[in-house]
Image (cartoon, rainbow, N blue to C red; front, side, top):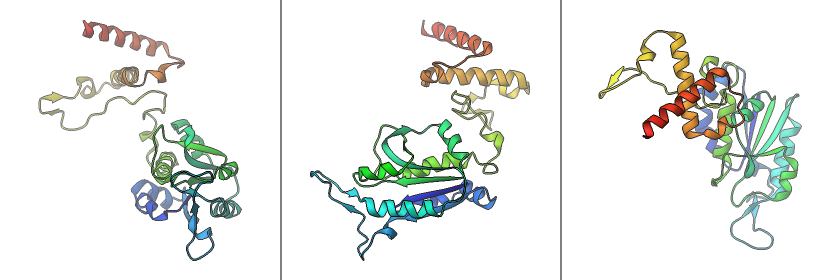
Length: 248
């Protein structure tokens, strides 16, 4: 797939693209990346890309012309196949793992990064969707675009080992179970015995139960409407019973 970043600060992407996972995906030929400087599409020596908002108010707003000219140029040269143009915006739909999978199946993902007080509203008529990382404000869309791209790139075949992603948080609708590594005992605290037992079925059950426990405690909303298996129902009942005993 190809990912194109539209930005007024292309240098912000240098370290991200030099990191191991994007580099591995690029070298394996499953990823092509283009960083387009919107300023290159603004006429004049000052490359004027923003202006004061009509009606008054603080801050500056990104102008239609350079943004849309840059977007048109990218779309004109985009590879054949499926594509989505997503603007990073606090008004957008919250980005999820499900969206990451949808993007990873595209041939071309264009991520448009806003800045300053935002972009001229007319720009949004030329994008397919708006994406947000949550209910908070960043200085610009570049950090959010990198987060979205990272979530997508790691799903591409060969970017990382496929078994590394299968049991992560949100992949199966639950938070991931606790993980441990060497040493088995540190500062008097031991790794759960079941993980040292070598019994793969017991380990599977422990991980599922602890995944359910963490989800129930930290993100109970993920359990709402989930089609629970009989095993999951039983584990949740055990967890709730254990919790009631602890609370006494």
